[in-house]
Image (cartoon, rainbow over all chains, first blue to last red):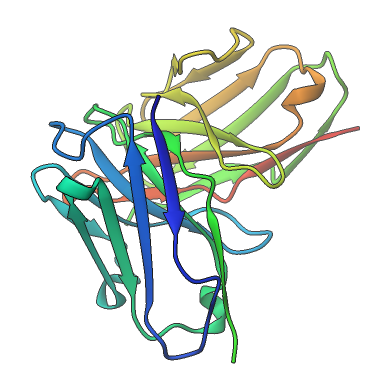
Length: 121
Length: 109
């Protein structure tokens, strides 16, 4: 059974750095052609893709947020970590980690439950 | 950067009616298009991948068409549990980046 679970702070202050951890089970981060994405959703708004990382350490970032994001993985711990610097109230959102299925089309086949992060002083 | 435009923003229909949702890409995305359903307070769920393939466990009343720039998600006969928000998503060629559309809300008329 594939599961993904996000963890991290529920509240961060403006200008702080956000660190989110995704712990996966039911598959290995060393599986070829499988990846993990971070996707966020501000309250009442659409989904926004942030970044992804694959077993071969291939990484890709949202063009608009690239300067603020870093994604990494610890295969032995089955964890993917996302850091976002210089947080702002507009970054308030539910942050999801999700698995990218084993296909060249990069669709998401499993999602975590999401974690709401509020940015406020 | 590819932009996905979904229309209409809201679709008001009754149970049993047919729903047709559109997703238009600003440039060709081959068949690299997926559809997701999201209900309030829940994570999205994969419905369709590669434009027309149903994900595991998705009922046959959901179908997708493409490829190219104009994609459609059709729900042949709406069930009460189908009222939700639907998103399309594509990947760019290289580097592979994901983009989501703005969503279509299917509401009960």
